[in-house]
Length: 452
Image (cartoon, rainbow, N blue to C red; front, side, top):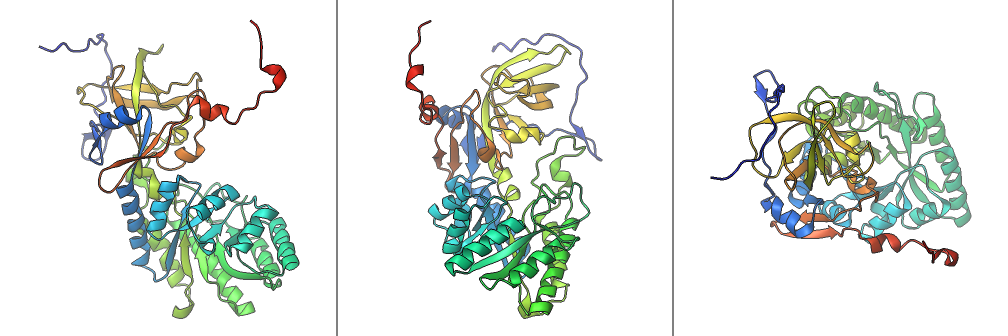
């Protein structure tokens, strides 16, 4: 007879799961395989922790998004948001599906070029474009989205000096009824700043005004603000047509669509409260179709969705380091996944699943990472089974921002593994080592030697 793990007797309130209108429910079950590949095999081969990405899920997410918009509107083009996850393999999956590139720095711009994206299919956003950045964008005929007047003047000077032309749009910020209003980027619609920028551009022959752009927020829990934003961009486009007889080619609605992750402090699970892609598509396309454009003048809808495309296509696998009792009587679980590689733990209550079968006994516990910092908390409160040292866990929906905002801090960054359409695994980013860190350090000669 197999011995069971000893558990110290205690009296605690049991939580059988979150309430819904039918009864109680629990979201926890063992996750032993991802896309048919054993979690134990993945950790055994690639180490712990390790990021795992599903190519199948990425492609399905993209196709679902395209379907939601193209079944409602005739002209739609997606551009992959590099800042969301700029691993080259991830980017190329989206490019293979037909997505352009949307970048916000020269680093990302050059990454897109090296990935084989034609310059004229790169959207260059962001407030920090240098003269050199703009010259490269002009040379490659990229779409330059102007963020502020200083950028507009610098671009005009470059174009006039070189006698070249550029395709440009402006980013517009506006009141869509949400708080906080994102007004630090772009030109404001309500106070006339956006129209002033348009007027200046239309007076510069070297600039061809081809689009209007907005990005109203992130993790938007309502589709209605997108209808407001679309209406205001349409208003600008129609007025440009009336005043200058210039047809705007596209309206870039940005991104911000929510994934099914659960925000911290949310009463309900994320999947229960987020709009669907169909909801977002309805709000945007219905507004533009009903605005009054002639059929031949309908602008293309550009979308820069990132989070909703990639969040649920990645998992972070790790191992239990220890379990301990806190001063307040709660159990704490310490795992080898820290906030240095799971930055979104500050935003989300990530679902954590055991990677092996477990008992029916569940209790509330804190989940900490391995870093020697008090902020290294993955979940302040999670209803989990009793887990022991060496057990393995799976953290869900980690594909957006973690692999771009992660950092080497105390513990180094791990491997990223892709599971392809046939279930084969590929390392798409190697783990770091001490040599990786030392490669960029320089030690002055007088500091090389010491005696203790």
